[in-house]
Amino acid sequence: QVQFVESGGGLVQPGGSLRLSCAASGFSLANYAIGWFRQAPEKEREGVSCISSRDGSTYYADSVKGRFTISRDNAKNTVYLQMNSLKPEDTAVYYCATGYFSLRRSIANFRPNSGSWGQGTQVTVSS
Image (cartoon, rainbow, N blue to C red; front, side, top):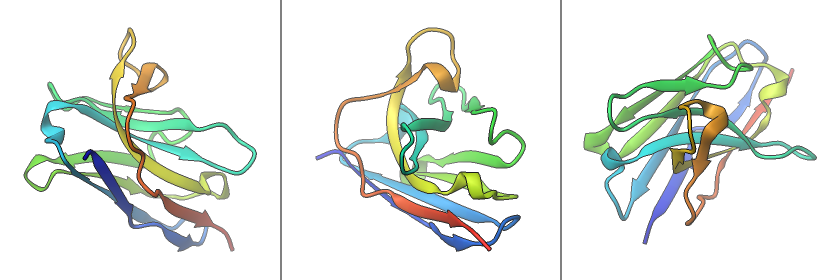
C-alpha cells in the first residue's frame, strides 16, 4: 500500500537545474523523515538528502551541499529536491524513501525503511 512516485528527471546540461518530486501514497509522510537516494551504474546506492518530520531539519551529502535543496509539502504528501548547478557526476536514478536516523542525525546515518521503492526518475547530466 505504501507507494512512492518519483518524477521530474530528464536530460540537462552541466550547470543546469531540475526539480524532482516524490509523491507518497498509502500513508502520511508528515509523520516520517524522508530522503532522496541515488544509484548510478557500477556504484552503490547513496543517500543524497533527507528532511526530518519533527522540525524540518535538512541534511545533505557533501557532494551536493550548496547545490541541492530538499523541501516537503505535507498538504500534498510530496517531497521535492531542487537540483542546481548539476554536474555529470550527478547522473543517476533518483529514489525517495522514508527512513530513520540510526544514531546522530546525518545523511550518513539515514537508513531507509523496509518497503516499496518507487520506479525512480532518471537524471542525466551531459553536454
